[in-house]
Amino acid sequence: MKISILLPDLRGGGVERIRIVLAHEFAILGHDVEFVLMQARGKLLKEAKYSFSVANLAIPRARALPFALARYLRRHRPDALIAAMWPLTVIAPVAARLSGHQCAVLVSEHNTLSVQYRDWGRLHRGFMRASMALGYRLVDHRVGVSTGVVEDIARMSGLEPGAFNVLHNPVPPHSEPSTEAIEAAEALWSGPVGARIVTVGSMKAQKNHPFLLRAFARLHRPDARLMFVGDGKGREALLTLARQLGVEDRVILAGFHSDPTPFYMTADLFVLSSNYEGFGNVIVEAMACGTPVV
Image (cartoon, rainbow, N blue to C red; front, side, top):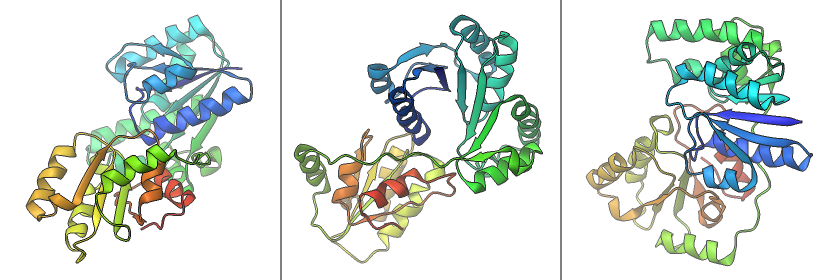
């Protein structure tokens, strides 16, 4: 089969990483995979291009997606289209209808959308519900990454939970990091073993990193270190808060790493402080490395 995977871009987020994992598994099974991006950018773009073709729709906003995607489908004629994350999950089936090309459309949601967008106002919520009620009915398969996500999107769309499949995110077995990778992680810790705390994720409001930082500041362990593996717009605000709390010298901002395994393996504790998660991939990744989780 020819499978097209639709995403806004290939930023270094969990959904994007999952799609690359799935693409490799599809390729192993003999399928031809192409990434279809609203904009060809992001920290995982180079990795995706190394193994797969990438189609750049070159559109900045979702409202231009229906016709751009319809043109792509008419031209490339994939057997299946996989779309993740609202509003792409409701635009994709509409674009498939507009294209006149018949292909299987699968959509997957990765967060509890009612929580993710709860502060966007009543009008936005009404539009979301209406778009999901229409878009989900036009697809061949509907997926949520956890029972909680499925229950949430079923309520919002007016469909029965049985209309959705629960498919947990894939977490591939981690490969043993090289000696160099472990040594590089060790050098960043700049502290003894026994009180190393790590968190992994994009620096965005959902992850509630300031909450974790304030908790760390109350920990009466001068030898403790807190490492943030990830990047994003909240980086500078986090640094400012660390200075205000007097823990700047014990906080490490390691930046984005495509494979965080060396950090899990050299940490004593993994902590996730998110306000909400559809399925916490990082929890499973930490557990796979034998790292205790809070």
